[in-house]
Every structure is written in C-alpha cells, then in structure tokens.
Amino acid sequence: MIELQPVEARSAIRGMFPQSGHTWRRAFAVLDGSSRGRCITDDPETPTWSAVQEFSDDSVVYLAGSLDHTTVTNVIEHLRRNRIVTLALADNDPRLDLIPDTATDERVDIDFEDRDPSIDIERLTSPPPDLRLARIDHDLVPRCMWSPWMTMSLDSALDHGLGYCLLDGDEVVAEAFAGPLVDGAMEMATITTDAYQRRGLAAIVCAKTILECERLGYTTWWNTSLANVASAGLARKLGYRVEQHYRAFVWEPSETTKTSPTA
Image 1 (cartoon, rainbow, N blue to C red):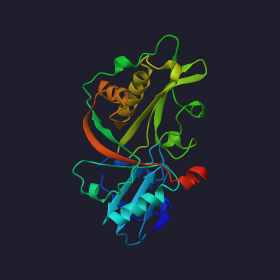
Image 2: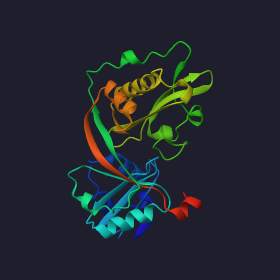
Image 3: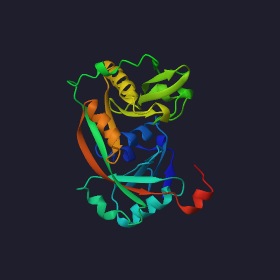
C-alpha cells in the first residue's frame, strides 16, 4: 500500500476512476490539486487498484480497480487512522459485498445531479432590508463560517470557486459557495449561523451563487443526507432534480488517533 501526493498520481491511476457515482467530482478535484485529500495505490506505475480520500467533513473515499474484501478492509483501516471515513455506493453496486461489517454508522445520501433551468430563482435573491448581500472576496473569505469549503486552502478558494454571503454589519450570517470546478460543474455548499436560521437566508445566497455560476457557463450540483430534510428541500426549491440515492457507510477514526490526531 503506497501513499502518494494526489498530484503525483499518474494517468493510469486517474483513468481508473469513473465519472459517475456518489460525489465523484470530489475525487477528481483531489487529483487535480484543487481540493485537499490523499491517494493510495498498490503500484504508482501499473496499479491494479487505487483509492482517493477527500478531506471534507465526511472524508469520502473513492475506490477503483480490482478489489477484494481484504483490500477494501485494509484501505479503510489505513485511512481511518487519521480521520473519519465515508464510503457511499448505489444499491446495485457489486462492491457492497466487499465492505467490512465494522462501520460505525450508516445513512442514505442524495446527489442532485442537475438543475431545472425553467425554475425561476431570480425571485429568491432579494435580501431582507436589515442584511447586505455581497460576493465573497478575499477580504470576506476569512470571515466565512465554513471555509475553505471543498477547496485546497483559504488562499486558493476563490481560484476554484465562487460564492455569496449575507452580512449583518461586518458579520457573515449566511453564505453559499460553489466549487471546485470539475468537468464544468461545481458543488454547492451553504451554511447559516444559528441565530439567523429559519429566515430563508440560505435560499438567497444559494440562488445568487447558482445564477452567477450559470451566467459564467457552469452547472452546479448538490449533495446531502436523506435525513437532512431541510437541505434536500432547499435543493428541490432551487430546481435541482435527478436524485440519486446512495448507501453511505461511516467509520469513525480509530481510538489511537482520536487521542493523538495527525490530521
């Protein structure tokens, strides 16, 4: 098992990963160097299998190549030494039979793969009179709540995506960000501070961000958990459709690294 810097991954490794499946663009964002993550394989030059892990809150793992139960188990155990591991597969994916029964949690995730352009979201972009809508720039990035989103760092976030926020004075109270760009599409993310929730602010910043992406010729997509009813409802309100469900298995970091984290 060999760990590589993702940008060192050869074309043989990159070519193993399909452009489909649960949040698949995140794997390519890691390999492109626009998102944080890592890559492991059995052979950098002539791999028979490879795995990519992205470093979001879920740290989703993507597997490719000739896999068996032992390899999948060893990959999961290796990656969970440092952080949480999530592996999500469709119900008809044959790799489900290879997953070890040691997962600490299981849920259902939804990917919304495109947005219906006939859904008018321009009407959602007007901010309330007590708040100011602003494009996230280099001055605002450090003040945002959920940064650097899916991108490599605060310094490079705006090189790989864009977003809008709502401000109460100088405080960012709601934000949306799209990125990084993979194959012409960007993933949406949004968060609202606790004191400002239930006011529809996420819809405002998301709608503005989506429209700017579409103006620039990009598409957007959305990922959430089935249990996150508010997030899925907002996605549908914004016009997202083609819902694909996935079984997501979660492994918490191993006990040794919980007490002495390395990442």
